[in-house]
View 1 (cartoon, one colour):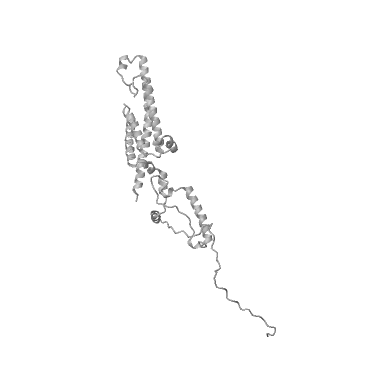
View 2 (cartoon, helix red, strand yellow):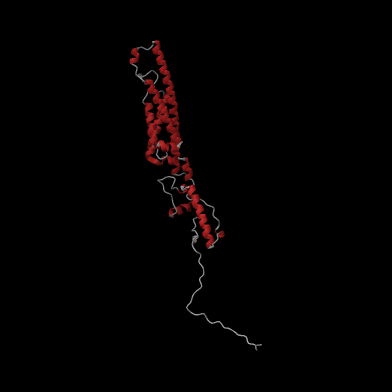
Length: 290
């Protein structure tokens, strides 16, 4: 049976996929609008030079026909800059959604990095969608911008719901780490083959403990759930950890007691008594003895 965690994982990734699709559509529509504006401006300039457009027509026209370029000083420049900035923002949001390069966003754009949730992403998407919808555009650009605005509202809601854990919940690497067992598995020898000698068990136990500690330090503590997220604590080695390990099929045995390597081995000391030793009989041989 699929748990709630799986539903959250697939739901967040479905929204992530739709968000990526909407960003691609807005990217394509922005390029299309730039091309359309440039063609409309060229046709407008050609009409002015040919005399088909009078000064009265220019005075009553706020926008150049069939474009989003305002009929004012520097209108073409600012219209193109607006579209280029939208394309740049869309590219940054697209890279943030696919999670590459994550260290770059964590350092230079922390709100789009792994430490923040989906709220900031949704705000940026909503601003871009509102900026495009505030102008008279063609149907393709209108649908793409409205789609992006809806996804931005959904991401803002998910950011408020899951806060900073939203990206870790939808991460594929975190999903694979959580799919591992609660405790690490090790290959142990059968109990019948263990040497119960005190000196042998102390040296072998200490060497195996040191090697186990080294492996756990290099591998990290993600299998216990403590280092995966700073706000989530693992089961540890207490009662909860033993219970969770039992549910997973692991057996925790009590380690054998042993003395440390630097401890001296006990030696037998002859008993001392205040009583004098009993006299030993002495026999002397005689020359006439048979």
